[in-house]
Length: 504
Ligand code: FDA
Image (cartoon, rainbow, N blue to C red; front, side, top):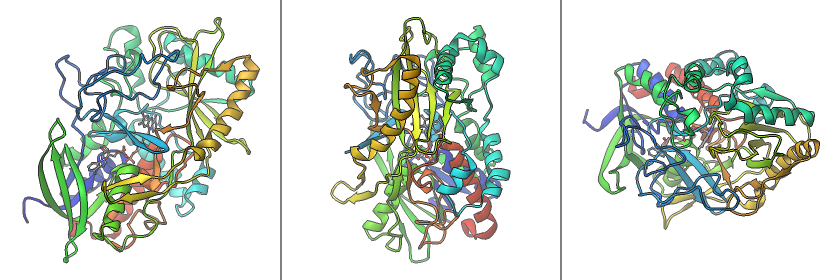
């Protein structure tokens, strides 16, 4: 065996990649994890691993000259984004003509930048979206396993009711109730004991210091602290960072050959290696995995890949919006970055919406209620391969976001009319009330049961698996990482039992 051969390789270290790595390691399969982002473990000159949202520096974003925060203006003023030096920062915004997609970069993928909301989807909707997946084992085994491994818990209600840090959520709950809408607590992977100590002043603040989308220095159980730590603990798993897989092909003996660009922190490719493996697990996320497979099919490297590769993409119906409250209804200068409550109107037959009550992190009173709405948008988009640029391009159009906006508007018009309030038009760079041009929840591109079998085995190639969000057909009705994790657990349980993984 050469130094560059591994029985198994995992591409990407988000939810799908991290689950694959742990279960391979536990099964005794020597595994290499390739991650294009950094390992976020070393403090910068300020003594902190991550920068804050209010004073972003090069660590904030993936090779950008200026930050591109989702909430880009306040009172239409360009006061939020800052110039930065290009660097492999933790949050990326990948822009296609009709949609921008936020993704995490680094060991832990999206878990490094996300809000930690850990929701199991309603069973009936899960079955509707993934009819090939038997629901009993998911709801009896894999969802509970995923939640336990991820460390999902719910905010202690007595503390929630009393702390100033969740005033914004209580205000939004009361306003939803006035409109006859139900709110629910949503579990989260943030350590609420830690958060209480932050509030007491006995622990260094993170969620209570405006940290989230550029990383949390404390408190959040991101994947590097859960699955990936456990994977490394098996002694079988090696991590290689700042290593972007560019191409995949197959040698005549069935070995997969990966072309891997190693970059330095300026983005310069310092080496291009070929790494080979028997079994290949794709956990590069909806954008990353789909691009790798599409490129492989379109360049003829893996010509047997299904025509379904590249199809079935959706942004989980994401829409962000803000409402303006009356002066007698302050939402608080102090807001925890970690959302713990949602308006749950998913059972609404005509306009299902699950809207997370989000903080607006200004550090001063804004009287704004902010929401990330998840809607049931039936539109789907396709990635096509642009040979000249060697990239995948998503053909989502702005018009396809209209059903998401209509559903969010139907719900929040009710909230506004019951509370005699209006939308905010100053938060998203122009005068739109609904931010429909970006999403946090990219899903699909290699849909389960279409581009793969019912377990994520890629059609046309044995030993090739997808374990990430590209398996989910564009919509799951709730924040997606628990579903991605549970499906990856299901795939790994099956393939490690049935397939000769790593040449075993
Ligand atoms: P994920 O994107 O996590 O990981 C893919 C990894 O592969 C990345 O680390 C990437 O760098 C790497 N990669 C890609 N291409 C590669 C290549 N060619 N070579 C090497 N490495 C490569 N969800 C939720 O359930 N609750 C929440 O609260 C939130 N909140 C939220 C906030 C924000 C700001 C964002 C951006 C996202 C969320 N999400 C969320 C979404 C959630 O984070 C997302 O669904 C998952 O991270 C997707 O998991 P995957 O395993 O599919 O890929």
